[in-house]
Amino acid sequence: NDVPLDYPVNPDEEDWSKLYPAYFRPHTEDAQTAVCDAKRPLSPSAADEAGSDESLSKRGPAAASAATTEKVPAQVEFADIGCGYGGLLVALAPLYPNTLMVGMEIRVKLVDYLQQRIEALRGFQHGLLLKKDAEWVDVRSKLLQEIAALNQPLVGDEDELHDNGETTRLVPGHYENIAAMRINCQKYLPNFFKKGQLSKMFILFADPHFKRRKHKARIISTTMLAEYAYVMRTGGILYMITDVKDLCDWSVSHLDAFPLFERIPDEELIGDPAIPCVVNSTEEGKKVARNKGKKYLACYRRIEDPAEN
Ligand code: SAM
View 1 (cartoon, helix red, strand yellow):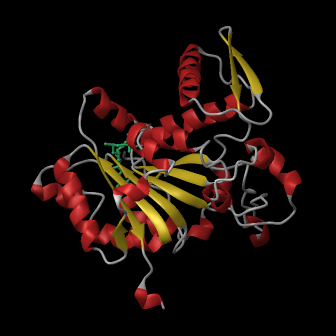
View 2 (cartoon, rainbow, N blue to C red; view 1 turned 90 degrees about the vertical axis):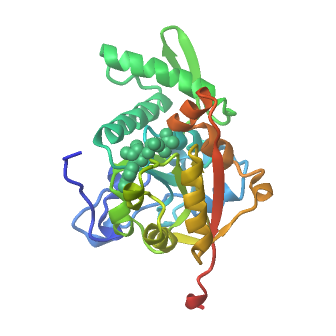
């Protein structure tokens, strides 16, 4: 973790093309081309939130350039704060194929792992076999199992991939919409995101920092909530889950006291396709389930700021 953190002075300075090459043109010295090219008929998450059943392949990045010439600025809309190994993103990617999501993580090793994992998943979708050394054969077979376990409906044109005699059919357009970046979320969020940019934020199984003198390091605090409210849009949802009752109580008390978030009643969460992923898909969440631990979920809506009317 001694590797220095790299961060832009403001969100427009970040070169998103490195993270989402299918969606953005690389930055050049010409400011015009630094504007991203969404290549999409609809603003990304509007299509996902509308729950359209249009074929993924029709709207996936590979085919999208033919779909429209209109340029809509693409932007990241979901952020996983402290994403760890990235299980949430991998699960959400096919559910919201038109939404760009980023996993933010402070630990170098985890970011490296997740970037490789995403690169491998993208390679699979194109039917490519990536590096062939023993380590990668191992990673590949684990990923194949993972993809099969996602149990997602297959629609559109399917790629076939042969690995050790197995055939897996993959949906084109998956996994181009997820990426990992190294960041200290407690310091640099507004450097990466504009005001009101995010429609979902995930804080899943955060480090509990049990000791009282360490509480200030908790990822939910009054100061951090002000930053989260700034980068989230009105109506956006903050998902929090933990297996530590004390951390849940701490988080809920801070969120309840914060004027720009309101608790979403549990019954309103039924039918939210993100919830099963929040509860079950992260590596930490799976560990808690294996150990038969309890999970405490609380979701909050970013409400309108009366000062802005
Ligand atoms: N959300 C993942 C999951 O459910 O599997 C990981 C949970 S893990 C207990 C908490 C993660 O948050 C760790 O990977 C840690 O490195 C990361 N983290 C802690 N503080 C952070 C910060 N300030 N910025 C970014 N990541 C942070």
